[in-house]
Image (cartoon, rainbow, N blue to C red; front, top):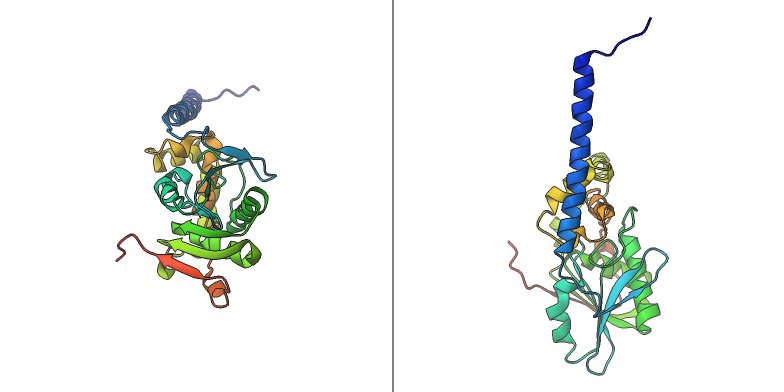
Amino acid sequence: MSRKKHPILKTTASIAGLAVLSVELLNRIFFSWMAGKSSLEEDDGAYYHWKQGDFFYQKIEGGLGRPILILHALSPDQSAAQCKSLALSLSEKRTVYTMDLLGCGRSAKPPVTYSNFLYVLQTVECVEKIIGQPVHLVAVGNSAEIAIAAARYQPEDFYQITLVDPPREGERKKVPDTESRFRKKLIEVPILGTLLYNIAFYQSAEAHMGGEDARYLYASMEGRYTDYDVEWMLSDMKIPVHVVETETKE
């Protein structure tokens, strides 16, 4: 005997399928539209071809002395552009380098799990292969954790570190747990994850550059994979570390 599908079930399935296709179409349209609004330029820098993903960097010629490398805050809506005024100010006395961290701005946004160590490797790669000499490393916001870990991993590449508005001890997140891993997996899911990403970064054109894989950095951050408690590293750090606070924190 042949079994016939109930018309209500068929209708429900059709509506559900149409809804999914509609969300996917809206996601793609929104990504394309937002990326087109980005003001980030590529003619004032260059790309370094790295095995983990190509990343964009800039060099601002300045005064004599050891160069400075600036790390912008880590977030899908951040890039070296947010540090432009700082870079120009510092370039009055030193040559300054900036770069877009992987998953941000003009750099590649591979669909991988982003970790603190990935950015440590990118920072070291930039110093050793692009700059070619030890640097004064300036880290903004939560990239402070990258700077400290990089100095611990390859101390000969850095002679001084300045942390601008770093997270305070109580602001640091914990290691990945069941809940954070679930959030990560949810954001990585096609269509639904992209929708959640669009909602979170609906005002940022830069966060939509590079296509829908841009959500993977956000997923890793929500999963706490980019967090790293570097407090214990500071106890025996031989490189001078300075903290500059420009924001009022309660």
